[in-house]
Image 1 (spheres, rainbow, N blue to C red):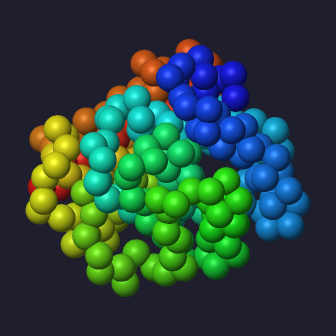
Image 2 (cartoon, rainbow, N blue to C red; image 1 turned 120 degrees about the vertical axis):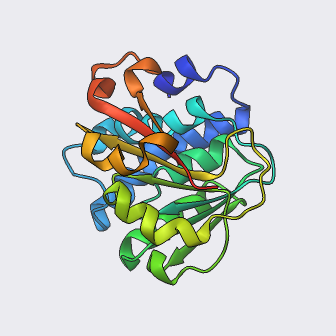
Amino acid sequence: MNDIETYFPNLTALQKQQFDALPGLYADWNAKINVISRKDIGNLTLHHVLHSLAIARYISFVPGTRIMDVGTGGGFPGIPLAIFFPEIHFLLLDSIGKKIKVAEAIAKEIGLSNVEVKHARVENEKNKYHFIVSRAVMVLPELVRVTRKNITTEQINALPNGIICLKGGDLTAEIQPFKRMADEISLSKYFAEPFFQTKKLVYVSLS
C-alpha cells in the first residue's frame, strides 16, 4: 500500500482499505485459478495495482464516464481504476471465464458497486463507452479495429474519447498508423521504481 500512497496521497479511508485488501485476495484466488504469474504474485501492488493506476496519472475521468476494460484477466487495470474512480462505471470484459470469475469475486469482496463483469469476446460487445482501457492484451491496430465501434460520440472529458493502453517495449511499429492521434508516455515519468523504466502508456483518440 505504501507504494500507492506515495503517489496518491489523497485516498479516502475506504480506498485505502480496498487497496490494502487486494494482495491477500489475489494470493488466495491465484492459488486456485492462476491469473497472475506465481513468481510475480508477491509484487502485486507494484507490478499490477500501481501499474494500472498509471492511467489515473494520465487522466482524471469526470463522474459519469463509462469505461470498458478489454481482456481484463483477473481485473487489471479495471479494478484498481474502479477503486480510484468510484463515480466511473467500468465494464470488465474477458473471453476466459475462469479469469473473469476472479475479477468478479474480488470486486464483490471489496464492495465495488461501479463494476460490471462480462464473460465475452470484445467483438460481440455492442455497448458504447467513452474510453477503452487495456493492459498488453493485443497489438494496437487490432485493439483499435475491434473496439472502435464501442466508442460513444458523447464527449464529457477534457481528453477526446479513445483507447488508453499499458504496454512495454518498442511501440514504434504499433503506433505508426495512429501517430497523428496517438500519445506515448514513458511510465518512468510517473513512477520512480525501476520496473517502470520499460513501461509505456499509449493513448489513441478515436473521436
